[in-house]
Length: 111
Image 1 (cartoon, helix red, strand yellow):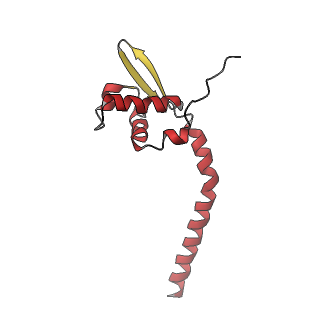
Image 2 (cartoon, helix red, strand yellow):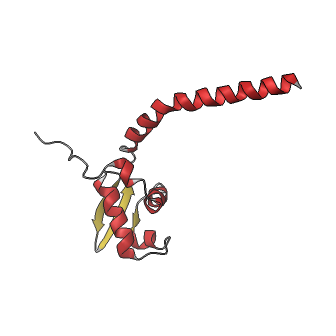
Image 3 (cartoon, one colour):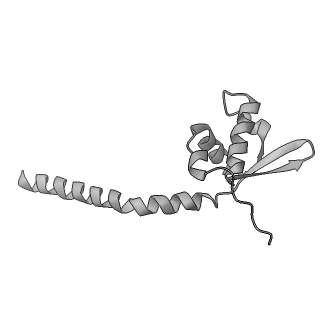
């Protein structure tokens, strides 16, 4: 049975690095070659390529060859796993913010 290959890299680990998060933001604007992407970083093109490979292994980036050039594009689908995970904990943030709001309002009413 043919199906999508399982990602080799965990999405959470892939986005843990600030350089990779910035690459994802840059690719949100559309497909780009590694030469254009590497111009945004004070690191070598080889280092940028390694970061792109990690993102690709997590399924966040896809590459395609156009002549001698490799172009990369964002695939945000794997980020849904992260969104679902964060949504579970959102209720704790909402509870804390609600408690803070009540505390501030009670303090203002007491003055």
